Image 1 (cartoon, helix red, strand yellow):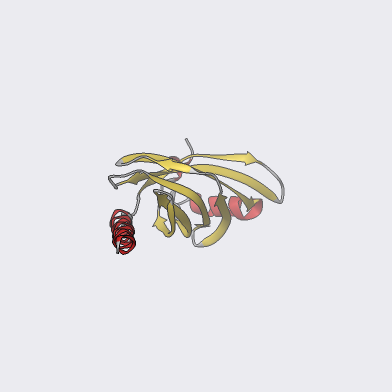
Image 2 (tube, helix red, strand yellow):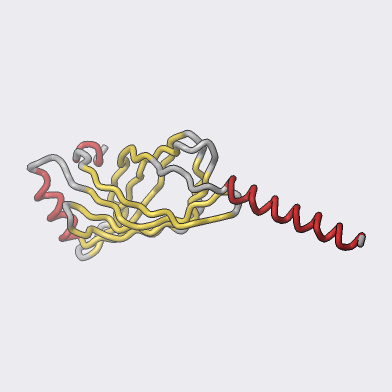
Length: 158
């Protein structure tokens, strides 16, 4: 009889722990996009170049998050510019701004052609599509990335 009571208490504690974990691990609100900054050519090549920039984001959640990895396709004026993978851990502060560094290899002719064609408008259509692994408390989940905007060329090159 004593063993059954202990088993029921253990089961109740485990069940309560699972319920609290589910409540505390609700899906976070999406990040607010703030802009690009520090665009630069990391390595220049005739066929392929490496470019880098930082994406500014705001975390509206009342708790810190971690970005474990991310994979993003970057489109410039609806043409694929390149693919970026983030494989390092980024700590995201609660209710604060943070920056995610991105680097990617691009075909030099495609990148230069896209910049020249959009120089007349001084605005680019930038689209990001992909996903990231976000987590808190050791539990990670996939988070889709969908962004489309028109930053001014002067905002990208500072």
